[in-house]
Structure formats: C-alpha cells, structure tokens
Image 1 (tube, helix red, strand yellow):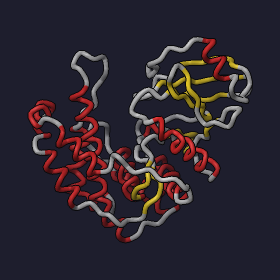
Image 2: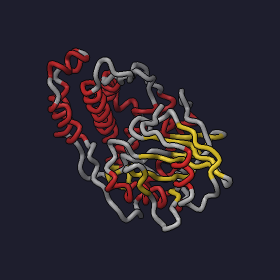
Image 3: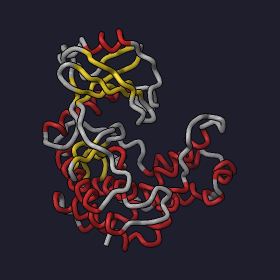
Length: 318
C-alpha cells in the first residue's frame, strides 16, 4: 500500500477541520501510487483525496503543480481541483511533510485500453495543452531527453548489462537521439506521464486525469508521444496496437490539429519518450536492493518500444 506515514484519527480530524469540507467520517489508505502517501477522505459533505508528499517531489514546486490543477479545472479540463484551506492555502504541513487535499473524481483506470478510450484520452490531452497555454507559470522539464540521457551515462555500464545485455551501449544511443532532438515545436504545459493508471474513465468518457507532478513547459507533440508509448503497447512492449494508436492521434487532432513539423517529428519524439522510461526504470532498478519487497519495473519493456519506433515509427503514426 502506498502509505508511508502513519496518521491517527486525531490527525485526520484535525486536518479536515482546517478546511470547509464538513466533518470527518472516514480515512482509508489508497494502494495506488509510488512516491507519495494517499488516503480517500470522506466527510459529511463528500469525498476527497489527501496526498502527503514523501519523496521525488520538490515541495517548493507545489504551488506550481496545485495552481496548475486549479487553472485546468477552471478551464473545463477533466482535472481535480485543489481544495484550499480556510486561509486560502493550497497545501499545509503535517508531521513535518507537505499535504494537499484534492477533489475526488469518480472513474476507473483502463487496464487494456480500447480505441474508443484512447480517442477520448487524446481529446482530453489536447484540451489540457490548449488550456495550459494561458497558465502564467513555467517549469523546466527536468526529464527531457538530455537529462534522462545523463542518467544513463551516470549508470555503471556493466551493471546496466547485468540487468539485460540489450542495455549495453544504451547511453551512447541516447546521446545520438539527443543530438537529433527538435527545438522549435509548439509548447505548452504538458502532463508528461499520462499512463492509463493516471486516467479515470466513466461511461466511455475521461472523468479525470491525475498525477500532474511531472508537468512542465515543453513540446505538446512530445507529450502526445509519451501518451502514445504508454497506451498503445502491451505491458512488456512486445505488441503494438495500431487501432489504439490511430484512435489516440485522431482524438487529439480533433481538438488541436498538429502542424506538419509535429507530425514528422512524432517518431523521434516517441523514441525520446521511451528513453525517459528506460533511464528512470534502469536507475530505479539499480538503486533498489535485491531483497526489497518492491517489484522492479523492467527498463527493457520500453527499450522494445524504442526499437519499434526507431524501425517502424512512421507507420505507427500513419
């Protein structure tokens, strides 16, 4: 369960009292999530999500992330708004850690996305990009290809090969990709991590997009490519679903048409998306003790996707 800090009933009651949301009824830990502790809070007025930021999130950047949620929600995007406390603050401190109360949105994350679900997600992502252009704040994407290539360079090549021999030479391959990376495509605020488990769906529509803690100002087509790599393959990256991929792009273009330059760059952008997850998974794999009770994610799952986009990328986006 993704609850790293134990809180008692008096902690929850005291915190809820700082908000105009009614009285606490229950607080239940949520299993989903990796970096933070999460609880489903029920009060006499409704349901909310309480998040305690444990690691990987620079709390100094919380005003950006939470302000972005508020901006997108006000713009009509399927995004949960932040619940501000009685003093107007978007987050508070509890047990020496930052916490935020977020609107609860109903829905279920798809496990095997269908074309109709992918089309709906493509449209929802495009709406986020359009709304993000009027968000006045900026955040540099610290997981851009140059940064993730640096992660691979910092890894011991022998240890990468121990994970899987196919990771031999991946750092040099990443550097070649970075050298070709486009620099002038249209930008906005991007989600940057829109996997199926970060999307809630209800009756065939997107009821919520969550976990914006990698959001940054970057190329919109890159965000579309990240989503493509996340939605259009089976879990280990061996099988590509052409129908899901086509529907995702169609849904996006119906709301925000792509420029010619963006369409031509998509295969390379998708390789950059795969680079990011190869690097982060490899780093996590090497940093996780072998006896830890955590299932490590295989970086080769995204190396296979990278190979696909490098060899058949144009066909994937036809």
